[in-house]
Amino acid sequence: MNRTAQEVQTCWLESRQPEDRTGNEAEKFSDECWKNGLRLDKSPSVHYQLLMETIRRTLIRGQSEGLRRSPLLSLPG
Image (cartoon, helix red, strand yellow):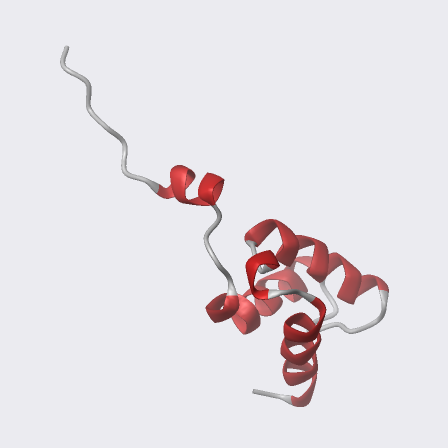
């Protein structure tokens, strides 16, 4: 992990409580990093992807996120 990625991960862990480390907060955090000049790439979309790879292991799944990822149910026809 390069120095900037380590800074991003440290900042993420220090700025969010464990229960607040959700996908929605990660999106906000990515925007905050970009705005403050802590960038993992020149492109905003690549920055976001790299940031998510960096912090992915620390994310928790919220209830709504879990529901979105649940398999589709087939109903009797």
